Length: 277
Image 1 (cartoon, rainbow, N blue to C red):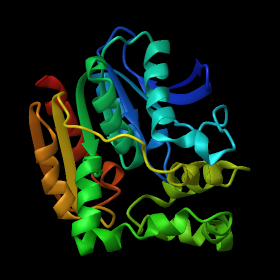
Image 2: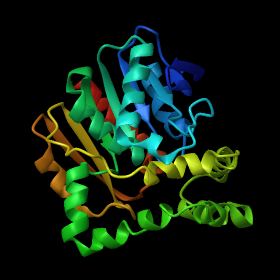
Image 3: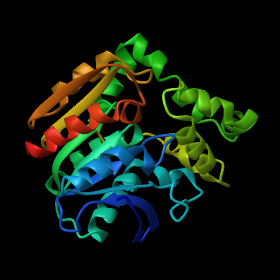
């Protein structure tokens, strides 16, 4: 049911998984760190069965064909540009955009800069970037949760620490919430030459230059109560950053890895959201 795609763009060729009829309503799904497009297997397969055309790419740095060496080439403008380039290549004038973790941040910025291209937005885990920035300044809990970002911006030391002892640090990051075979798959991908550095360059590229505004497109935001990266302050404040139709859903007792930890719940909410817009 799931197809393997290669999507050529000016930046290089993106690997992707896809399902559903070519003429189905288009949905693009963006993964986070340290995962890959296969994070969305359950959602892509289900959407395909329901008649949507669901495509999840391995994003910049994760696709071997789009792996620039310089951290400066992983800024938010480039990442959003990839989203639009992929949609253009697929012939999608308008599409639904879904993102988790870093993919969620890219999705927020894409909705801010290209609202006319999006039919709807769905973000899992990652609060609106302005809500997160405010929480990091005013909420000690969120400031502590985000401390890892400073560490990961350091040079090659971080890569060595993450991959030593059979990538024990990377494995522990998942907190045993995913099947071991899925974690092995992510570790295998990030163990390729240059892959982990490319993924960490998302953190090292520097903060976006401009300010993100309120989001106009219909938005679903899903936050899980046991998310170690994002606390409730920014999650609840996200409602104040969306001017379009907005739905906020909490998934109880699920971690940051909720897309794969509770796939049926996430997919159900996503399908409800898509069918109402």
